[in-house]
Structure formats: structure tokens, C-alpha cells
Length: 64
Image 1 (cartoon, one colour):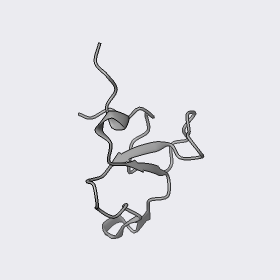
Image 2 (image 1 turned 90 degrees about the vertical axis):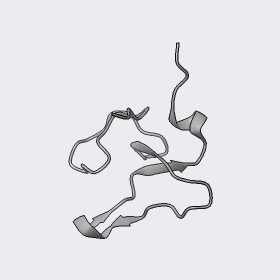
Image 3 (image 1 turned 180 degrees about the vertical axis):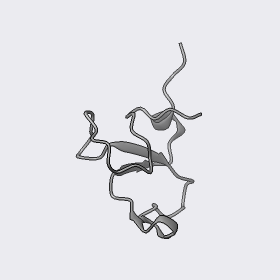
Image 4 (image 1 turned 90 degrees about the horizontal axis):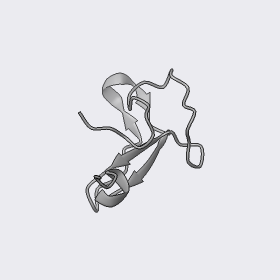
């Protein structure tokens, strides 16, 4: 299981988040050069709640 630095399930828009960055409540790791996910047609869902990064250091915190 992957844990986001902002803990909110990625596909559930109904849970209010207490932590946001620029109004976004999740961070999504995408491959370099890949387009940012803007919708999930299968669920008829708009993805407007993510900050996108292709930097693995931004996505995974340093281990202790």
C-alpha cells in the first residue's frame, strides 16, 4: 500500500481533507513526459484535486 504525504484516498472526493497545498489534497506520481490525469471516464470522475509530480523524492518521504 502506498501512502501519500497528504492522506486522502485518491478516488474518493467526498472526504474533506484538512491538509492541502494550493487547494489540492493529493499528490500524484506520473511518469516523466506522461500527461496529467484530468478525468477517469470509467467512473465519470474529474481529477482536479491533485498536484502532479514526476519526482520520486517529492512523492516518497525519506526513510529514517
